[in-house]
Image (cartoon, rainbow, N blue to C red):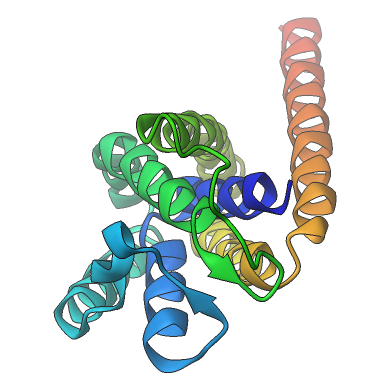
Length: 199
């Protein structure tokens, strides 16, 4: 159960920012005993991989805060975020963490299954983020882009850390995300209805 929650939290985090969950796992595996990556995923803790992830994260953080550039970035990230989500779910769900002491056999017979699940989760979150950003930019004349991006980055960091340290809270965060999506879609539908009435 904890394996699923850890993997789901990391994949959802990757849907917001591809590099934060991978970098979180790499740093924690390299410099702490909080997470032990399985043999096939130990490359995430390599110094060069961490350095590359830091550079990619810096580019993502800057690009995602500039209106119009953020849209181009979201298009590019349509491939990157789901891929990162697959990697994060695969590594996270088969890692030994402070809450998962025997990750062993959860997806052991089909190694591709956790990666596929992670891709789907990250892709779903990415689609929501990509749909919300143009609305934020349009309604705030672009001023809301850096605010929304910073909130997304913070949510990605929190989700990554929570997924590793307290995976039970991932349920709360994912339910919160679903509630936000329904609220956002309802608000968007209300705005469209008002526009039709005015015209």
